[in-house]
Image 1 (cartoon, rainbow, N blue to C red):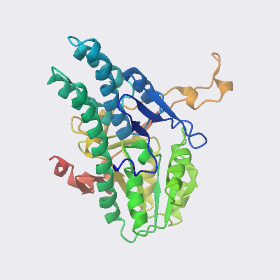
Image 2 (image 1 turned 120 degrees about the vertical axis):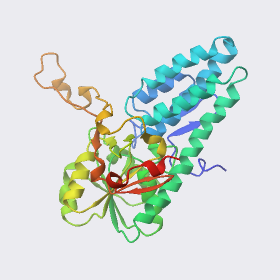
Image 3 (image 1 turned 45 degrees about the vertical axis):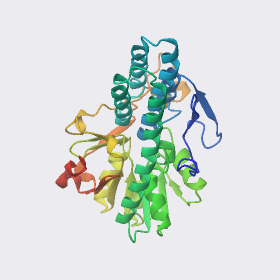
Length: 345
């Protein structure tokens, strides 16, 4: 039995010629998997947030490329690479912020460029390897992060950085899972508007693993910290700049500011594939803006309405507000002072 088979929650299931995607928009009320056999279908699943979370998006994209090769190579043995590259462009355009998407597609593209004949099995195995490596990285991060929480009784998390957002086990929730096994008592989850990933996904996912969780309104976080009930805030990341600035779900930055004000430590857990060494700092990170109708009630969606909405999906937390960045390659304490160079190996 593989590590993936042992997981309670699986966002992605690969069946050789089909990628099954758990539709996270319908959780927790409905548990349903959509089946995809083409790269454009996978791109749509990413764009419409059926699958979300930076590592899971990268994994899904890898499988999307594998589906593209299966589709194009048998029917177009002379031109399959060009056709697959068009699908890769489509996948790359599905979400702009999650660097794991582009990391996975770059791995695929480099491998494809070296293949002339019989690429199906090779690309299939690479996609599976990306998935398996992510699960192993999550489990390693979980243990390293839990080491920092020795004696800690209470933590808070934001959005969903668990098995639903990764290949399995999770980044932030992976740390929390490992810490619960060592005695962590209390987990708080912010609801995470406007998509309510905390309320719908994190609370459900932890409950599936038998972990108690207390849900709070996003606006209650400051008061909770002031009460002294929180020791650490633990979040994931969608992109990390070379200086340690972190892009994550909107609301992460405000939690980091609140944590600093209340002497609460702040941890980011993410695989090294989330680090974008090509950008110097967070000001270079493209922040995805989603449609206003995700925020606006129907009565404000008329053409003549005076009510509009600003709907950034992510914000950037500067490195100076981060106590620790935890990766599968190691932990960087106070990244503003230490930098991330130790992880470059």
